Image 1 (tube, rainbow, N blue to C red):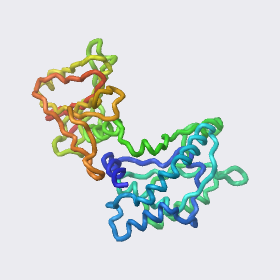
Image 2: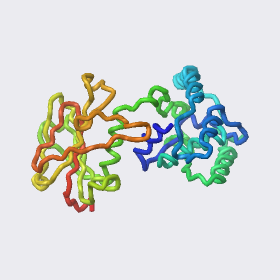
Image 3: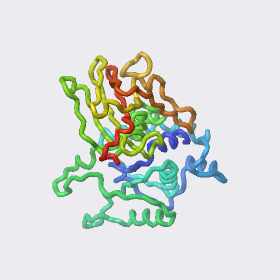
Image 4: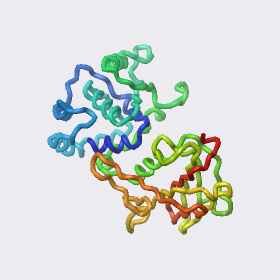
Length: 321
């Protein structure tokens, strides 16, 4: 859907991993016909830019919602009984997955079935070869994964391989945006890959956690090389204040303070950024993540059970240049 693509695109560049225990029970069938849902979707995209597709056809949405209760029961039963059945997927399914990843700016990592074996228990690569040949014919750029664990296979137990390691696939979760999405979006925008040393002086340190990175200068024209991003979590039940060291004391700081929205506190299903509740503008537009500039020398306030990102501008840190 356009909404899901918009949310995914907000986190790009990133990897999308299609893998886990259940991929060891999936078999590629190049002769399998597309499902009704897939046919309807592709028909709705005729003569359209595939990356600017419209909403899911109403007939498809209704059918998916009608089938979901029974599918959910099957998924839960497999998960808790740790018993999985082989199933097949088609060329169309691969096309849809790749299109979603590609249009969202994500690099796809696809898990191959590692349980297909020959008579002498060696890995049977013939099905994987069919899949690789098909993806090559479509010029798909995909990374491949064989096996889900780093554990030494000579000593691994059956439980090591059958213990589910994938996220629950509840339709209600897919249709809602949870707080951790906005955290991920802010992290992607503000936090670079270079990690620096940071600590809190005093007794508050055990519940006041701080982390320091070079700022991500690729996501915003506002920031430049040499800037710092400090992010902090306050686990105290009272407001705490951070003070920057003297050599950063006169620097301008942009604050991105995240708190629960409404009266439910930590149970709230929405969050505020600098006092404004975060929500999508529409299915194709994410909200603007607006900073609050602080005066040089200001303390960095963190209300109880909140977290914040603080971009220290013009810090001119050599490690970040």
